[in-house]
Amino acid sequence: MNANDIAIEGYSPVSYFTKDRAEKGHPRFAAIHNGKIYYLRSSEQMATFNQNPEKYVPALGAHCPYSLALGRDVAVDPERFKLIDGRLYLFHKSEELDALRDWNNAENQQELLERAEGRFELFNF
Picture 1 (tube, one colour):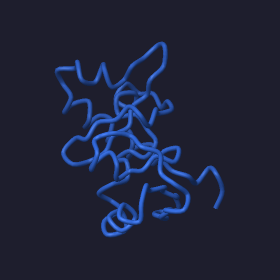
Picture 2 (tube, rainbow, N blue to C red):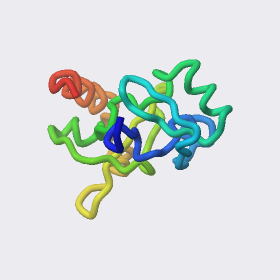
Picture 3 (spheres, helix red, strand yellow):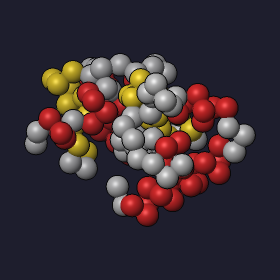
């Protein structure tokens, strides 16, 4: 395993759910799931993650749902996130696009999500 295998740039996936914020994890609380290394903040978070990792990993991996819905694949910002139906989604942010803001302003979020998930499956990320 190498640095490319570290998921969410080292942010703890459990913190999104339990604290509703992005928090960096610690290498000493590392868990491996599907070839990716997830850093958690504590042994408690590590135990929580290991009980049901699929609940906590980003639904589309490191892919922004808004950008995928528009037919693009751009980097995500782990501090830009939203929990939708109990799943974690990470969003892109740059000078050109604040994907989370645009997602939240969209009237057709369910349609966007279906398009994003379809493209995610189509391209087999």
